[in-house]
Image (cartoon, rainbow, N blue to C red; front, top):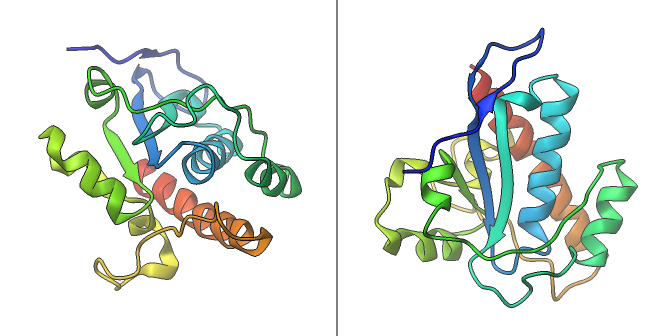
Length: 174
């Protein structure tokens, strides 16, 4: 089993192992890299970044080694979210040991993760943590893939992921 990197501590947090958070989408160029950047940004603003090991990946390797989609980079830049990204595919040999929280962007990603037979308590749909989705209980919790659409899809994706990342961070810090 892979051990978690040790937390180095800061005035605002206690020492201990960092909690792994992995965001998953299809190709790791639109949704999951933006979720990673947003979560990192919000954790940094709250001065708890050292508590987390944050990454993203795709269920497939079609874009491995690529930058994030230019439209994802543009919406992140529009909101002042720093983003450096190289796409990668899920590594089933170590990601399930490294990451305690695995956040799927939609049900197809959740279904792709289930056959690995890892603790399903680690798997969540990203929008389970979006306050705007409270009470939906499994309905309409997908973050739609904006890849084949226009800029409005990337704006909508940003808004959903921003709310969900804030909600996830609040949940994890309780």
